[in-house]
Structure formats: C-alpha cells, structure tokens
Image (cartoon, rainbow, N blue to C red; front, side):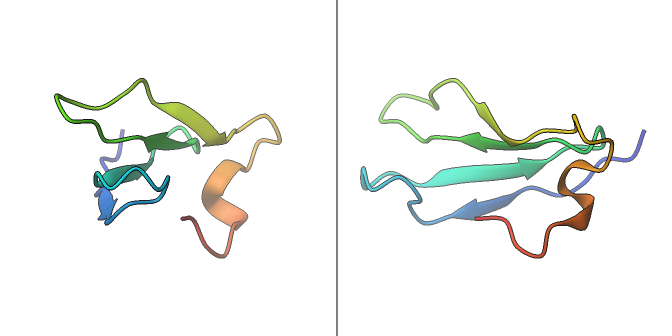
Length: 61
C-alpha cells in the first residue's frame, strides 16, 4: 500500500481552527475538522464507489 502525504489547510470550515484533508491509497478523500482539543470525526468527501475516487478530480479543498 502506498502512503500519500496529507496537506493541512488553514481553516476550511470557518471555525478558526486548522483542518486537514487526506487522500487515501484506497482512492477515498477525507476531511478531518480541527478542534480545540483534537480533531472531530473525519468524513468522506470523495468516495471510491465509482472505482476511481479522488484520482480523476482536479482539485480537493
């Protein structure tokens, strides 16, 4: 399995706390909302249900 780098964003959800996007080797893209004491539960923003997932997207975030 290939490990891909994660990229942080300053604040994607408007709460003033840095967030993180992750693209997984399984072709799924996840959003990890930042929090004052840790991050909230991640959620899938791009699924791999089409068999391609994030691999055919031009931009994430």
